[in-house]
Structure formats: structure tokens, C-alpha cells
Image (cartoon, rainbow, N blue to C red):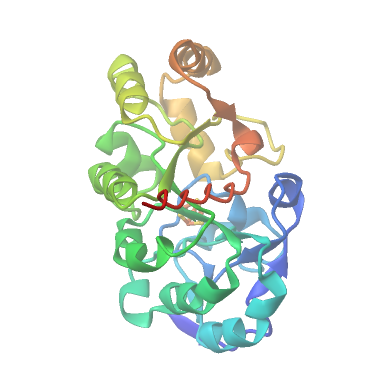
Length: 273
Ligand code: SF4
């Protein structure tokens, strides 16, 4: 891991995040050791390293919390996406506590906060997350198969740990989004659909995973394309899953699922005796 001194910790939202209604993004780290083979972040201009090195390096913004202290008033009440080009709950976050420090600073300023992660470590910060009036935690669970997960995102946390984290987040009273983005090949599509439906997340997001032949998307990584070609997973399989899910509940597709959480309705005061 390298460390860097960043100039800013909140950046104006751009692209689909801006279109979704967010004002700011917040990335305590640069790069991502989870190194998902399909990660769009490796294609962004701020990644100046070779794409094939994605997942082999990352940097920690060691002044992230100090910057947040200075810049938090700017994001008060606005929609913040944490994080757009890294994961805020990397294993190193356990000791560095950058994401935690930023959350501590943000609580008094009450932005509308969306946390996007694959990291079960998010449950450590439930004591802070429950203090936001508008917050949703999105957890990415793109397949039901550990074998598939190990092929496409070998350094990311096991799927069951993510499900457990989703349960804990919900138990704490924080809204949960489940992101099947992109939907990777499934072992038991019917069982996976059932599990998603039974979990009943506040928001369910799905996204297709196909070879866009060089177009920008969640599948543009060469390694991901090779893995996809070697599987029997096809666009029709994805469409069938989405149709089945839609028979049971609301499903957002792609960027439509990434929007800020609403402010929680105030709990009415009990009537006076
Ligand atoms: S966890 Fe997110 S940011 Fe990290 S490599 Fe995977 S998709 Fe990219």
C-alpha cells in the first residue's frame, strides 16, 4: 500500500452518479485491492496505471479525515456517494479508519449518504451509520456461486460474509440495497432469485454482463471477457432472471438503481397524556 496526500476528499459527482442525483463522491482510497476483473474504475482517466495491474496496487489518502473536517460543511444536506472508484471497506480500513473518520465528521452535517461496498467491515460502522437521517448501504452480491466469485473477483470477500453483513445492516435499521451488478453466471438461478426476493432489500439493482466488444461498460476488462466467454452464461439467462424477479418485486436496472436515499420520515412524537 502507498500513501498519498490528497487535495480534496469530496469531488463533484459526474457521469451516472451525477445523473442519479448525487452531488458529491467520496473516495478515501485510490485503486482497489479487491481487483474485480470487470471493474469500470480501471478504465477511468484517473487510473494512469496499466489496466492489467488493476487490483495490484492502491493508495490511502492519509489526510482524508483532516480534509473531511475542513470540507464537510460544503456537503451538508447534499447527496454523497461513498465510494465511486474504490471500496470504502477495504481490509486495510480496519486499521486506517479513514472511512470511519469521514463518517464521524459527516454526522453533524447530515448529508444524504449512499455507501457502496463489498466489504463486510461496513458493520463496524453501524453505530455511526444509524445516526444519519438519510442513509442506504448498497452491498454488491453479483452471483450465488463462490466458484464464480473466485474466478471474477478472487480478492473480494466471500459471498456469505456479504449476505451476513446485509442482514446486520438491516437489523440495525439502516436501509439496504443489494446490487447484482453485474449479474455474473449463476449456479442455481432459481434459488438465487428466491433468496433475493426473500431478503426483500429496500432497493434491488441488477445489471447485465455481456461482451460489449470494447464499448465502455461493466464488462470491458479483458480478463472478465475471457472468463465470460468461457462460461455458458448468456444475455438470455440474465433477461430471464430479471423477468422472474420482476414478477415478485421492484427491480432497478443499471444506473437507475443508484440514487440517493430519502430522508427518513420523522417519528411522530407520542401524544401527550
Ligand atoms: S470492489 Fe468495487 S472498486 Fe473495487 S475492484 Fe471491485 S468493483 Fe472495482
